[in-house]
Length: 77
Image (tube, rainbow, N blue to C red; front, side, top):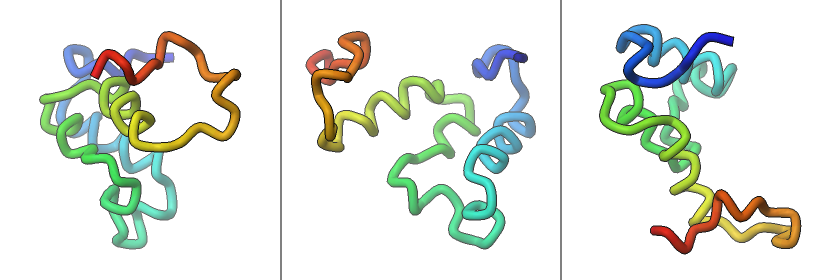
């Protein structure tokens, strides 16, 4: 799998990565707004996808907290 890090991709590639990840939802005009995550920050090269997704996870309650990996703990934010 190719790297999706900002340093390894162009803006166009990042836009394609986001569009492909969101699938039909993106192409129907809903864009990424419906996810609650500002993927434009990734597309513009300001924030890595991993960071955006980890921050978003901090806003949601986990159904099975005992299964949550401690690496993704929200306590660091």
